Each structure stands twice: as structure tokens, then as C-alpha cells.
Length: 257
Image 1 (cartoon, rainbow, N blue to C red):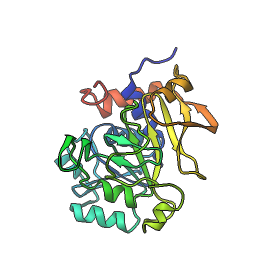
Image 2: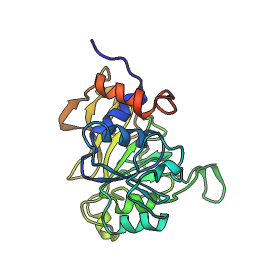
Image 3: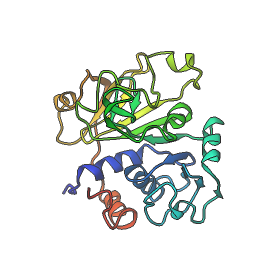
Image 4: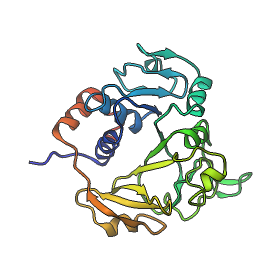
């Protein structure tokens, strides 16, 4: 009998599976941290978590509530600073990072600055980049966990906060960013989205249980082509849900939102 789960639990489990052992990931709070902790407790025990405030390799016994939470240093490898995290990125030591934003376009560019109006007089002002631009620029694989709807998935971001593939093939390299780096996966409540190697445009790679291709397309403001290897997303397993609910987030701070 299939296990019951909600959208957040599904997205966290899917993101967790994409993290490989013996790698380094820069995470924030919420879903990305839960995915990292789940990976460490299942298939990637040697996954190293790095936080923007400088904690590296902490034993994450409980979900931190901020990137500067003391739990992000608990029994860690080192206690550094934000500058150390950014240096590690620039040196090419970070395999994965998680980002989010108010808007994302077909090339994985992110806007977390403003929507509507102008930069000086926006309709809605968001927190801005913080370290997100550095992460998007220098981490080898950028992942996004986000709800999917046409307001977020737009043909063109209103402000480029964090670079994806910019305008398409070769654009990142022309801007001086490392080759073979950049957008990797987008995990939504409907599907797992990746990027076509030839065009650098976002595409559907797997559709979640009970979801149709048309539903995925209808929730996007631009055309999403399907990957030739289109698959069906594996639902969360009983083991994943048990770890997630009892060890990672027993208080339901994020998975029950």
C-alpha cells in the first residue's frame, strides 16, 4: 500500500535523492536543509553541509532555523565565516547549492529582488541576492525547490539577481563563469525539471505521481518541452518518510507547511 505524503515531503525526498555522497552542498533553511539531512541519514552519510555564515560539516541533529544558527557549527569540521564560504565557492569546492526566488525563467535565471514597477519604485521588494549570486555563479550544480505556477515561471525575469544560463548556450562562459557549472534541477510540487544540454532551456524530466504533462505545462508561463527520457517520479518510500518525520523534522516546522 502506498504511503500518504504531502507536496513538501515529496519535494524534500526528491531533492535528497539528487545529492551524492562524498560531495559538498551549500544549504539554507527549510526544504534544502531537510533534504540534506535526509540524504545524510540515507544514501549519502559523507555529504558535507556548508552554511553561508561559515559552518562546515556540522552534525545536524536538528533543523537549523537560520544559516547562522549555532546548530550549523555543532561538531563541525571547521568554524569559518561568510568570506570562507564564498572563497570555497570561488575555488570550485562546492558541488551543489540550493537557491530560490520570486521568479525563474527558461534558462534558470532567478529574480529575488523585486516584482512590478521599477528597481527604485517596485511593487514588491524582496530580500535581494545576499550570497545567492555567488552561489549561482560558482557552485557546480544549482538546485531550486519551489512551488510551480505561471507567476513564478516567467518568460523573462524582471530583474536578474542570480545567473542561470543567462541567454543560452555559451553565455555563462562568455560572462567569465566556470564552464559546466550552473542550473541543474528544479523540484516543484508537480515535476522534476532539468535543462536541455543543447539549448540550455528548462524541460520536464519526470512527472510526479498523479500529475499529467498538461498540468505541468499549465503551471508555467513559458513552454516546457519534455525530455526524451521522460520518467515518472518515484513516490517517497516508507523509509524516507519515517526518517523525515521522526529524525529530520519531527516538529513539522517545514514538512507540514
